[in-house]
Length: 85
Image (cartoon, rainbow, N blue to C red; front, side, top):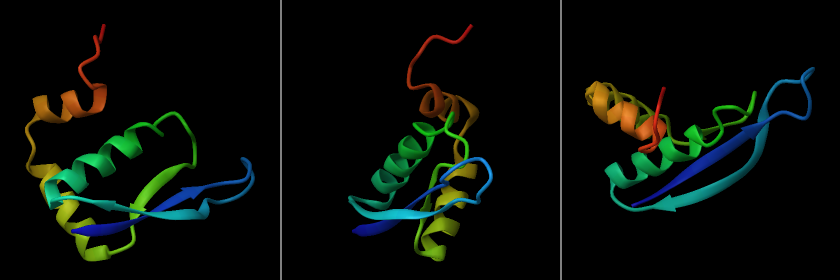
């Protein structure tokens, strides 16, 4: 399965985010969801930068999948096995 992601960013703090590029990621739905989550987590300190699914139905499926995860799994995905004080 191939899914197109949109990368959104803004020029400066006085502008809204706009699409800067698109990219295709491949794999099973779960693999794609994990890759998408990792890409967005890598931008968590970049204000205005984020990825979105181009397909709204896939976005809905991702949201359902993410909400179904237990807290420990979400924690591990967010911190990537790092040590948290």
